[in-house]
Length: 358
Image 1 (cartoon, helix red, strand yellow):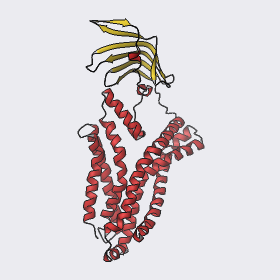
Image 2 (cartoon, rainbow, N blue to C red):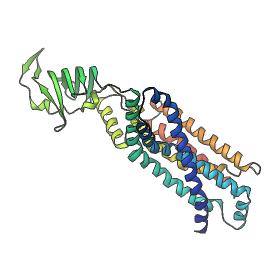
Image 3 (cartoon, rainbow, N blue to C red):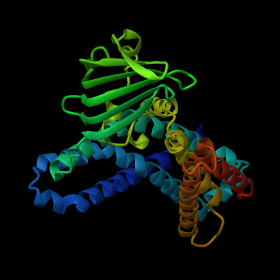
């Protein structure tokens, strides 16, 4: 317990200070990159400050692994440079026992990064980007034309001339219904269809239903058997792509399910979804790498240890970028695209710890 309190008393204050300054720098960089645009558009100061406020959770999320890496390297390097680690080893305390509190803290930090992004970062970043686009006049129109949407495992196909996001209506809408063998069951046509937020279904205006009879199509009364299946959300028809990184894991899972059900490509989205769970382990990997690489030399301990740790983490980022590209191009499974860097670097970290000075 004494060793736990000793190492955490050194680590946590330094980590919080490093986190504050790195997050502040990231926020100021974002401000300076857009400040000329803010001035040109005569943006109110209070709105600019609000954008910076909304960006705080994301900067903390970005800065946490870097701050922790720097903190662990700095603390352990000072202990090695002051021969405190040598005294510790001589007294019978192993490196593994001494750094256990750091690894536990890092594991908790990994969980914290996941929940921080899922419960706070996604929501505040959305507000930040929406306000920023409003101030800079960059609003994107969600209206869409010549829309084709495949739903229910390709058993329902929507084709509309135009989608209006303001009124949530589809114009000149054809809806094709097919069975499991992709045989035509019916075709619905209406001039306008409006989305009902209460019933979560499309209401058709003066719809006409056609059914195949031998080699022709005959008009029959519109049946609820087909209209009750028109539950594809209006968001699917908007003129924008869903960025899985900018939504919660729950919403991302629903979106990927929709892509699979529609028969659309989903490898890229699923690999990004898995990355939401895999990437926070960078917090733990940073600790492993800092512990394993610190103290490898007796001269310039802090400088060399920090340089080696940073190089290792940069290599992790590069490796992850490569595996994600492979996953997006369907050369490897999405799961491996997200998790392979974690698996490789945790194994590498365990190897480095095995040969660390104890």
